[in-house]
Amino acid sequence: MASDELETLELDLQPNEASGLLAVEATGLLEAHGWQRAFWVVLDESAAEECVAAIGQRPNGEWDVARLVATAVGNVGETRDAEALARRDGWIYVVGSQFGGKSGPLLPRQAFVARFRESDVQRLDAAPVQMQLARPGLLVHRLVNDALADEEVALVELGDVTREAFIDQSLREGSGESWVDDLHERDVPINIEGATFRSDGTLLLGLRYPVSAEGRPLLVELEGVERLFDGGDAPTVLGTWIVDAVGRDGDMAGVRDLSAIGDEIHLVTGNLDSRPKNSVVLHDYPGGRDTVSTHWRVALPPDSHGGHIAAELVREFPDMHRIEGIAADTEGRWFYVSDEDDHVRMEHTRLISDA
Image (tube, rainbow, N blue to C red; front, side, top):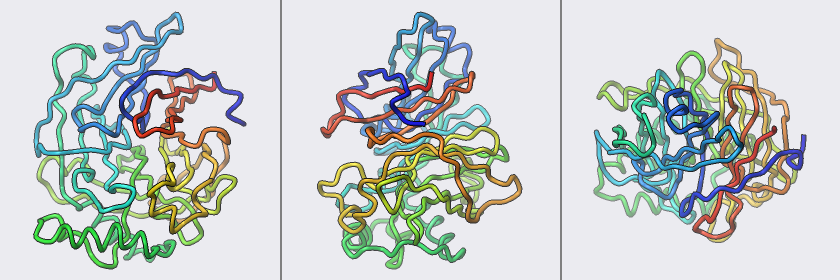
């Protein structure tokens, strides 16, 4: 199905870029604002405690946008580049990219996971809710790199420019910092842009980079993410999925967002970077520049945690290069959030539905 069959609505979320999308399930919040449906969205240019907003639809079809008011607690410090949202046991998790700037280096402020209780949000304009922060340095980077090596996942070869920008430069600039202990010379940078929980409680992390040697997107399955907040043992990577989900006009694709319905996983894949200027990744991987944003459906075996898997095409977005979020409402309609502005400061976000 093509994107021209969708309804489009432009919403002002200025001045930030919108990324992941997740349906609001708190009925009290919906009732308090008079919304028939609503979605959480993350804005990746803000700190974790300022990066969440809600987009709600009234019965007359009009839409509202409101920012979540939150206070950071826990391992408080600088955070940026929230990319994904996921829900488990009443908590809304916010996942940072674990990446860096387009020309490197890796930035520890982007290596965070945060969470808040959805039931704590009575209204968006009420008292602040607590946003728990976990800033474990490059721990997730280390866990993913070790797992990819241990599983002998065949990755696309790390390009020279990408290596210099994200590995070599990070090692030089991080010399003497505690986080650099989790960065090794043979590592690959990871860029997380999607997250969702499977029904058994493991967290799928969708990587925009790296991709497999054949250019396929990767899903890394993580157990125990909640332990980042309680001082327990580090999470464990259970396995990696290589998904046959590369859209047209490219020979490689990364994950843009994830959404789960039971063990059926929906993912949007697309280009490896949306802005060619100053992107070292696109310099090294031009085959990942123009890949069409595409919605896929995958049925993961319930007792498995990795392997190669086929995907079924659901919808293409040939005219929208930056589909950055996907979520379904209670009626089974799919919604997508897209940043189609070419400027650094986003002027509007499109919310698109298949209604």
